[in-house]
Image (cartoon, rainbow over all chains, first blue to last red; front, top):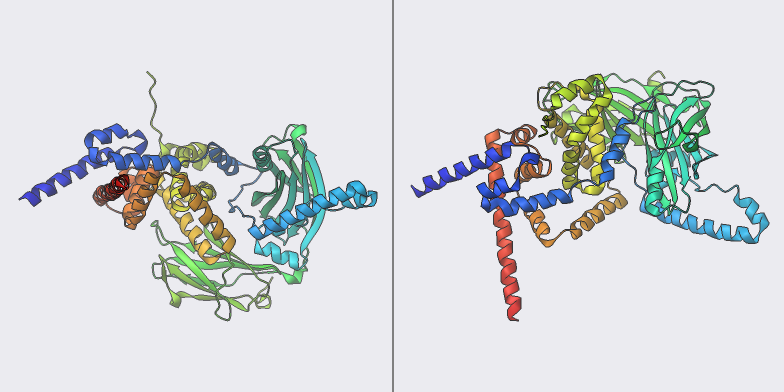
Length: 386
Length: 191
């Protein structure tokens, strides 16, 4: 009897609580809860304090908004921010120290001062970012060094290397913010430097691309930046890339806008890269289909593009494991997922120093691996037309 | 007296499908909720990247949203996928430096909080996964019960019951620790 009463009371309490909870939380007043459920108020207040601690900084909303709605004649796709690896921070610090020594020597020796002019600000920006494809490209001599520089509103942007493989372009640059700016101001300024409105040679037509721009501090007011672009139209093997450099979004003010003319060269022979279209499709137990849309081979990486077709509107959580031809897991693959009107696209970019004969793709759905649905993707360029 | 019109996501979705810029009100309305979802899951330092990725996917994939569920449900499902992808990426690329940074930042963030909040967080961590998810969606991501039910694919009554149970458990754990602290303080005052 008592048990039944307790059950009914508990049910009523749940119902009352639920009524309160049907409102959006933002409309809910703590005192409503206090009145109805004095027993929970301590917990609810604790949760509210935690909610405050998890709230974003004022600048975060604006930063994301800028990225989200930034248009440079193109749509900018999200690419996760690359973090400067710690070991490279040490290397950069050591390089800066060396640089200071050189400057000091420059004052004492005119010859040294002359030599200093030719030393780039940062030797390799790509080496500061954690992107294995660019590291391999650097090792294989596929990166073009350059020293294009522009000063906008006292801020000097120096492009010091470019990588181009036919579809992907990465531009590494240094940003030197005037010493007068505090570290916080300098970071904001560096984040606000935009390199955009790209045109090729004499054409006025903006190049369509998806991409991102990352900035990391190297030293107090010195920053390393990287512009990553996936161009969606064919470009020549060698061209001059014209780009606007601006502080913020305003391109109309000449004081805050400059131009860079960046020489871009595809540092690989046509026979070194290939695009394959293997006819591979698999249907998982749930009816979820994945197709190997294309395989792009370059000396620095292999890109596998999957098209996925869910059977219905329910949420699915597919995942894939990649193995090389010896059955060893390929750990370094960078995986990105994009959706557009044509479907769901999953791209694996595998930085490869030595390319295996094939890659085995083992799918899983909601954490359950379906080994019988694995597919083997050949990576031999001669098995397909270019 | 000024009257405010409730925000209508469906209206802005239909506009944003025609004009990209009209996604801005949806972004403004849901930004903090998505950010806090990630801040709780992965810490504030990574929340910004994942929030950006979620809205970018939502904006680019808006045409595939068939409006069969609430927009918020669809958006949180994207956030869940982004989170799964991120976890998978980290598992696949266990770079020591990166993990070090994440863990250090998480620890630093925790250290800043008060002891009570640590108790609450510890209590939250001890809840079963679904109950923790309900609390998190309800209190940090500001979801209504209908939204929580859709996101977790549960019945509304099941969500109500588990929310109530979760709050009771949290209360019980906090009280238990409070009593323990009081006893410890009393003991210390006699020494």
